[in-house]
Image (cartoon, rainbow, N blue to C red; front, side, top):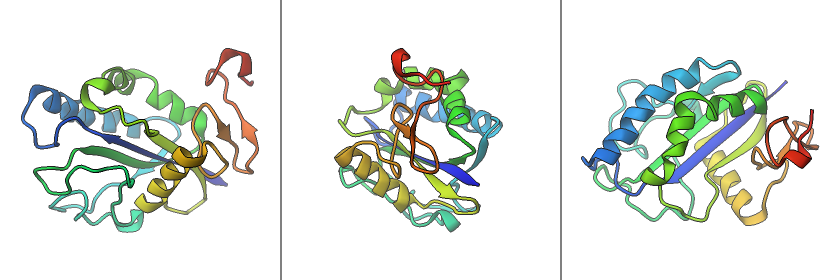
Length: 185
C-alpha cells in the first residue's frame, strides 16, 4: 500500500524571530493548527525534530526524515536571526483526507491569511508524491520534487491537488478538487 507524501514550503516576509504582531500571529496559528491536523483522519505522521533539539531548522536532528533542506530559490538567511521560511513534511493515506484537513477549519483560516505572512515567490508552495508503505520521505525528497514541479509541471512523482496522480501514475481527480467541469467521482 502506498502513502502520500506532502512537502510544503514558503518564504516568510519577516524572519521567524521578528517580534512584530504578524510574526506572532503566524507562530500562534501554527501552534494551534498542528495538533488539529494530527487528529485528522488520513493523517499518518509529520517530520518533527528529535526531542530536546536546539538550534536552527538546519541544525536539528530530524531522524529518518533526513537533513533539513530548502529549495534553491530560498535566498534568505540560515541563522537564528535571519531564517524566514516555513516548511512541513508529512505523510497521508490519500489525497482526499489531506485536502479535507488543509482546506477546513483552522488551517483554512490560516490559508486565508497566507499573503499577510508569506512572500509571493512565483514558485509552488507544496508538492505531493507517493511513497511505499514504510518509506519515510526526506526533506531533500520534498525539495527535489518541489523544484521538479516548478520546472516541469505536475507528473506522477511531483504533483498538486489540481493535477494529481494515483499511486500507479494514472492522472486522476478527487471530487471537489479542481475545475468543476473536470471533477471526478
